[in-house]
Amino acid sequence: MSKIAVDVEAIEYLLKSMNSRDRNILFQHLQENDIWKKELDRIVNKMRKTIQRKEITDEEIDKICQEVRKEQYEKRKHRL
Image (cartoon, rainbow, N blue to C red; front, top):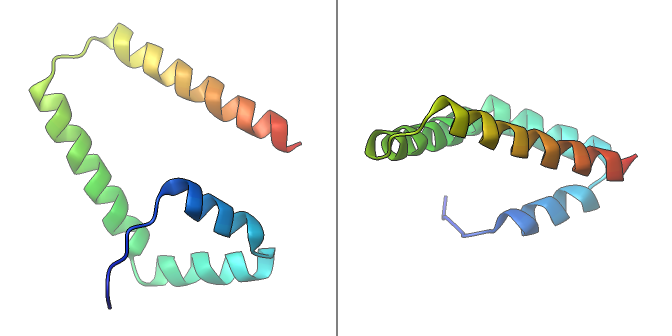
């Protein structure tokens, strides 16, 4: 299997253009092939390496979490 580079915006566009049946088939395929777990593990490991290099306070973590929650809420609000 060859590798290709695709940015997040392209993936989001493709997912939005798919009907729900095809999206479900794709997600099921990804789960069965353990792709999600591998990608999540890669991201978590990258975050751990970054955290080990930087000291971060609980306040900074709380601030980042609040920003992400707000961003997710705004995205969800616009979809409805």
